[in-house]
Image (tube, rainbow, N blue to C red; front, top):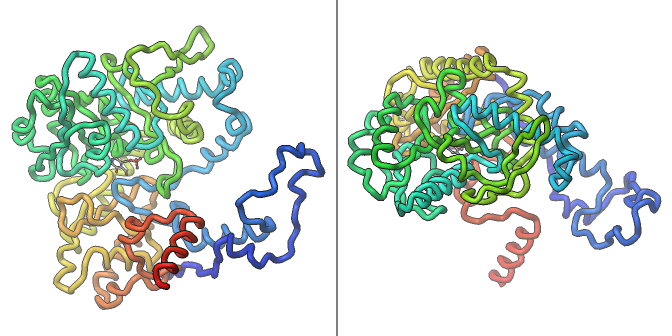
Length: 490
Ligand SMILES: Cc1ncc(COP(=O)(O)O)c(C=O)c1O
């Protein structure tokens, strides 16, 4: 299989406008049609012809990899191809050109879309009420944990602890801690919740247990209802991290598993590209006894009209401006309507089938801890690579040379040299077969090729930790840092 990423010399736009090339410039005032007082002279943005800006971004996009380029098996993140129809719908003027501050009487269609999306999510999640406000999965967790607190406070109880299994995604403890809870982690047993460890950890201080099912190893927690019983008997709540909902749609639901609070990652399961810091949506669903704590405003239906209800005295308040990321909500609405119930069930079935197909083939070449049937994702261990002086990281980097995005690596933390693969339902058998073939080829290659990979990408091996330690997100921040470095070196 041949792959080579494009390489362009792309200057930063600010640098490009230091030596501007003549091009077609449009009159920004549209022949004076824009009133003078609204025309600003000192905009701090690059001043370049449209042609150069388009070239800049197209060239950059060719040096990148995305869900439209090929397989992106990033476990836990659900990076899948999204139907373009969903993007088309959000570009319609009736969706794109409305404003959240319009009077509700003028945005009845948008309110209806959101009201119906809430109802559809209730059905998929097996919950009684949903808010669409949170902007991501982690934000949904934060909102859900606030609801946990409001619930206990309404009963005059001050519980200060949230429990999680050691397979939990990092956002779970972070969200609980941000709401002010102490976090207690319990070890898993054979990859699933150890009920005895859970029972030992529960006390009168336990506010909630956070769990995703299937968990991040791709294993279904079959004792989930017993877990719920243990929690409920202790007066605590069970929180569902919905990141893995795409494995179970139409088969079961968090509601059927007795979860009290659920978040949905619309940008993973329902057709919005996920990642890169783009907008997402993390609606939160609850059972009836928690409905009164949901954020305001609630969208209500009065006859055949829709209205906003702020009169919810026990609400945790607002968690995001306006109604959340409406474009993501409209994409999810389109996707769910397009798929229908049977289509969503088929999506989950295919996600699980694809995952087990790869698991079956790849576990012959790499180690498979907890060797059972998986749901939509599975976790291998790159331990056998150590004998050749290699690490999982080297294997992941070499995959890029063949035009595959690397899987998630080193998560979950309980698997040594973890390689977490989620092929998703959208990939064909041909693609999966090629992926297996490439993995096997890499494992037979000269180890030095892996250690120095990637070779065929626009950039070579990057310093993984530096981007997190030195956060430079804008050209201005870069300039400041460069000036500081220069001053320091004088
Ligand atoms: C299991 C799990 N929980 C929570 C999250 C957080 O979701 P988000 O990225 O939407 O904030 C993720 C993200 O990938 C996840 O995989």
